[in-house]
Image (cartoon, rainbow, N blue to C red):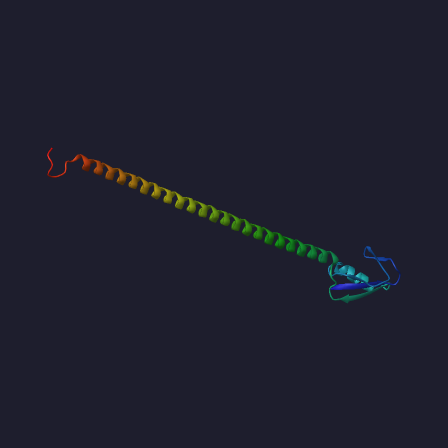
Length: 145
């Protein structure tokens, strides 16, 4: 249990500490059972048991832990957002590169098909010309050789 101690004379010392004339709260565990008995028995002190007074050091520690946890959450969130943005950028880059590769492949295929068609047309024309030349060299039917 926490204690509220008030000294009749400001600075009165008992159990190794000075006690002020104004009421001062001490957290549970601040004094041993033996010290509490000594304090309560001293006529120069008024000692009242109170609900546990908040321990200023414990409150500071708890606040520091809370702030550290909040910073970690914020840092983790920022890292996750950066990671997501990096992954999206990589995916976008990959999609752009794939699209460019697909367009190049389509253009290469179209060029190859055009080249093949041009070669076939040239071959057909050449064959047609050879046939025409061969037809001129052959005597017409009914003519003597």
